[in-house]
Amino acid sequence: MKISTRELVMAALFTALMCVVTILVRVFQPVVIIPFSLQPFIMLLAACILSPNAAFLSMLAYMLLGLIGMPVFSSPPYGGIAYVLKPSFGFILAFPAAAWVQSKLIRRTNLTNFLAAGIIGVAILYIIGLPYMYVILNLYMGKALNVMQVLKIGFFPFITFDLLKVVVAAFLAVELSRRMDLKREFDNE
Image 1: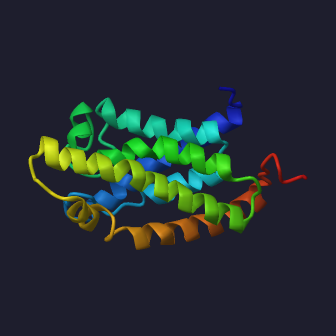
Image 2: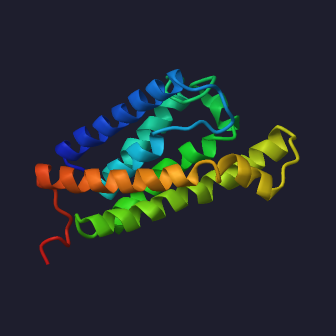
Image 3: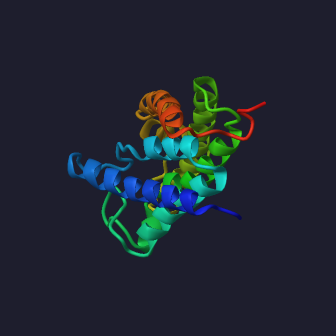
């Protein structure tokens, strides 16, 4: 995996941004099973701006910071290996894969590409996050919830906001790409 110094710095910037945004949002909301967060927005933006490898590394670094005990996650205990037993951890686990796939799908730095790839990135979050939630709630916590109940907890309340995050991230990525003169490998064809 080859990453330039500039990409590594940008990846670290998005890792830090993910930590800061998560901490700020958790201050202003009550503790819930799946908290509202701006994490998907930061992941979506990172995938638009960074190369696939750098986007993956930025989200992986965020996850690892939390798992080693840094208090960067959105609900108690805020960090540590025990967080893998939280129903929402599946979404955090999905961030690196979703960022990599989304970034890989962006062939040109334009709104259409950013929107389409962002929708797929969000789909990956749910494809990984919801089954993880189901397993933790049913097998670990013993809640005996069916699939529809899990969707009511982890999908329906959030999908509209996540799609809105895709749109905002795409528009912001277009502007950032223009100002930073970012190009994808196929932009020049």
